[in-house]
Image 1 (cartoon, rainbow, N blue to C red):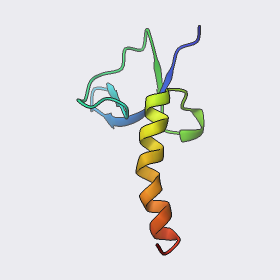
Image 2 (cartoon, rainbow, N blue to C red):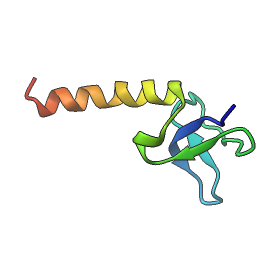
Image 3 (spheres, helix red, strand yellow):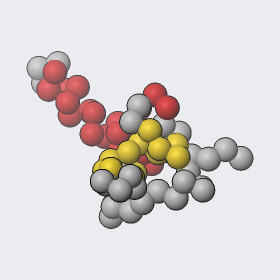
Length: 65
């Protein structure tokens, strides 16, 4: 089984990364998962859902609705 790849939401100065899917910021355990800044590489279903929910209003505004 491969490790999930999360979308990074917050990056601390010490290098720890909190995923987009976390309601409360927490560090990702790199033993169990990985992270990226590129949406095309995300495999975490929760991160993908949150990213799509955040992008939908932006796309609607861009179309003039």
